[in-house]
Amino acid sequence: MRIRASVAVVTGALALTALAVPAAQAAEGPGAASVARSVVADSVKTPTDETHGDTAISNVVVNGGKDVVLGTTTKKTFTVSFTAKDNSGIKWAQAILWHGPDFDHLDGGAVADSSDGRAACTKVNATTSTCKASFTVKADVDLINSLAGGWKVWAIAQGTDGNYVQKDNVKGFRIQRLSKLTVNAAPEPVKKGKTITVTGALTRANWETGKYAGYGTQSVKLQFKKKGASAYTTVKTIKTSTTGALKTTVTASVDGTFRYSFAGTSTTPAVNATGDYVDVQ
Image (cartoon, rainbow, N blue to C red):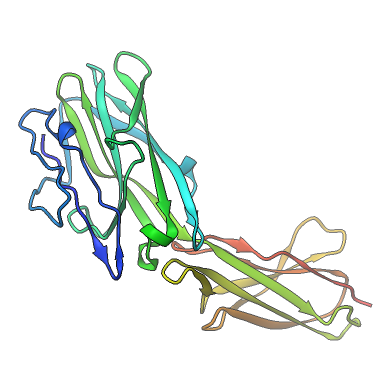
């Protein structure tokens, strides 16, 4: 069995967590390469995916199907679950999270909480097991801003007969920088027909400084909910300034609540500001 070497990646000033495939695991397959060394870019090369026999991986789910969102100092623990199948039954399985253009050019990673890196597999029947691996990521230790966005899951499973399947990109998911959004509508109260100025700010976690910073030139909707109504409607769409600030004006007509709403991007989740009620007299 050929499995890629572990890597220790350093990006900027942060040393990211090494990805480790235990040597004991690697040695279990026929013709195994001993690859569990904490080195930078070992020369082991394999095809993108490898399948020997009838072993299969399916139904991969990361964090219950939700994005993994971290603030400035957030510690997040989540699971990767998948189904592994082989006609002889499943002997072991493992999942690794990775970030980069491809698995031979990684620039980030995280390690399963289990001491040997294996997923915990529960037998469903003679051929099938459900496997889970737990991951813990600390925003202020493991992440830099360039690692926000799309990540992938590398996974491997081996049957008791020695057959196995290895997939570099069996599932995509996102790790995102927590966003915040504010709104203030003034003056309050205001006379009907007069101008209301609605200000606010869109910010997101900066994992490198440990603070929240403005998210510039992003489209944000100004929404309004009339007094007694159950839903907001969009009044207009504006863009944040280069510093994340928001400012626009509307004409006062009826009592109601204003809010800003951000749809999100691949690196930053959607967020709605807490509404600000305006009394129109």
